Structures are given as structure tokens and as C-alpha cells.
Amino acid sequence: MAWKTRWLRWLNLANLRQQLLALWVLWRHPQTPWPPKLVALAVLAYVVSPIDLIPDFIPILGQLDDLLLLPLGVALVIRLTPQPLWQHCLGQAQAGVVKLPRWIWGGVLIVVVWLLLLGWLAWWLLAGLRG
Image (cartoon, rainbow, N blue to C red; front, side):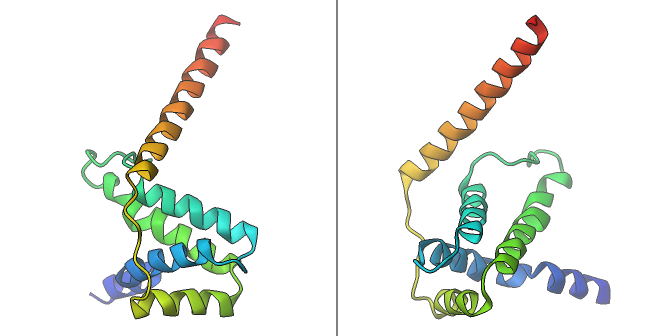
């Protein structure tokens, strides 16, 4: 049982919701440097994306993206962000000051980006087979 609490503490799954809200605050904050801003945007886009890197229909592997990739992305953002700025954004998220907007167009944009990437991959593969 102790190993479970160590893993949960390491992954910090209990605070993942507040951390994702803090990523939203961090992305919108004007003093955020561009590297953490880009990584935060990528993590947030992956969260709202209907397409997972690891498909959910695979019984155990399908949950790995939620259990590993999201916390690792959040950890990378935290590491790249200056600590006072991260504490400020996390404090706002924990206080409940910030709510995520519900954008239908954001979901449509993510699906379009995935389709474009899939089309580019298909074109690249077909071009490699021809030439």
C-alpha cells in the first residue's frame, strides 16, 4: 500500500485539476517566458483533444496518457517556470478565481490540427513509397 501513495505523490494526481487550471493561468499571464508558455499550451491542447496518443480502447495502456503523460507535461512546465510565477498561478487556481472557458471552436481547431497532421503523414508516406 505504501508504494501506491508514493506513486500518487510522485505523479501528483490528486492536484492535477488545480495544476491544469494553473497552466491556463500561466499561459495567459503576460510575464510567462515563452518556453513554459508553449509547453503549457501543448499540455492544455492535449487535455482537451479528443484524440489520445495511446488509444483508450486498449485496456490498461489507454490510461497511461492520463496517468503519465499529463503529469509529466505539468512537471515539465513547473520546471521551466520561475517558481514565484508558478506559485502565483497555482494560488489563483486553488482559490477558484479562474474557470476554464468552454470553447467549441477550440475543440474543432484541435480536430482540424490532428487531421492536418494525419494528412501530412499520409502524404509523406505515399511520397516515400513512390520515390
